Length: 79
Length: 149
Image 1 (tube, chains in turn green, yellow):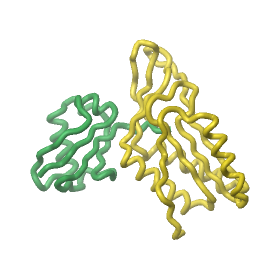
Image 2: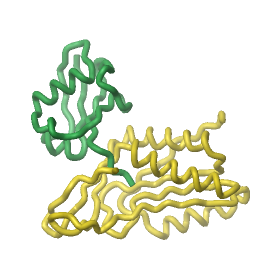
Image 3: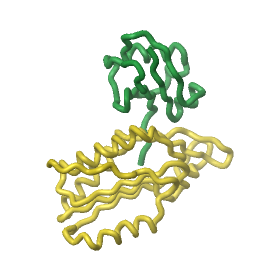
């Protein structure tokens, strides 16, 4: 299945791009995707980030469906 | 509380001017059921960093999600506190040191609701809205990424 991944702030900088299309096996949990991303981008290992799926903060057990919009969010700095 | 509020535009390009704040206050003179306004203004500090002094913050956001979260915070605040109205504005792009990047304006019949709602809304924004800030340091193009505590 295909999902899209968005990178923000320092994570876009670390991965070198703001977004990409990701081919993944189905089923896929947030935790599994996190592992795959850390493998592709070892630089993310020492970065703190949350994952949002379809604009909702997700825990690692949440499953990701095809065409989902997954976002990697570094620490918030609003205000 | 059954009433829901339509999502409002929160993001503004660049700093929020004192004129904008005073115009917002003026617009409420016709709302005579209001007895108390509380206003929070977030201003960019010239923090000392290793490479020099912070000269400004460049804000970016996951805007689609941020607008949803701002709306949820508004709805929650209206449900929790007895408010007449509420306005939230946040900057995107560059905001130089000394200028305002966050403007929260809550109004109620009596002071207590507006005091409490203001603190609640500001804390929720800091904790939950996906906004990111690059603190520009010195004059050489260095920067660090800001993180809310």
